[in-house]
Image (cartoon, rainbow, N blue to C red; front, side, top):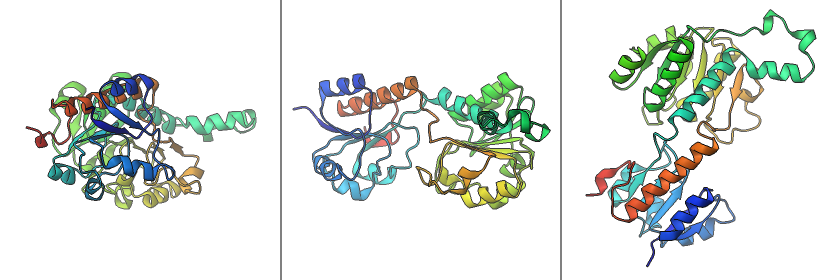
Length: 324
């Protein structure tokens, strides 16, 4: 008998077909109120779930007695309560590495867009105000030879550092839970305290996972430490930032601009003050959203799930200790 699995996010047809070859699949392109009851019914017999964003904790696990694998199509896994999963003996996996380059490209795009005011100037040209209004008041700030502070020197942080140093001659400083000798040796990155990083950086790029320690890591005091000519980039999770404090820092000129791919509430409310600011570039959480990368992420998620269901060690487990 084939294992019963639920795929609850849209994935490429060829990846879905591969899963269907060895599993009995219930497929939802997206979970919503209309299919919620159907999903919960299927969950009672599911041995694995694959997708992005489903909150998996003790309550959900109680409704899924046969569940053995949760395969996230993301790097982040703040939607998963790893302690609850491990206690129940359920293996959790994610999709790191395959998206590092694409997310790093997005971060560099936000750095360039904010410091050079690309989006603001694009709108000025399209509104027909080129000749009338272009002046030194619309000049931006250089990126090359400036100091980039990276908070969270993991895989993506290292990939951003590589681009910034090699492509833009930026000086790299970083703050992390522990020293990253690879980044220091290969990208001439310098480790420093968070306070020092905030005071010295021309660009502050936040790339930490969301944990109890990083919740609202960037708040009023942190923004006040930054240069008035500095830009803030968030490619981590929205909850790592006190958004009210960020709004205040932008309104009062404590910082120059911000580039955001993530928000506390997603989709971000249409009346959020960040959406009315010319010095804020906003993206809809698409750091890894290219056709090629999303395909690779789905493939890796499928590899993880199928390996685990077959009793093998998946390529990228999160809590591998639940398997012998």
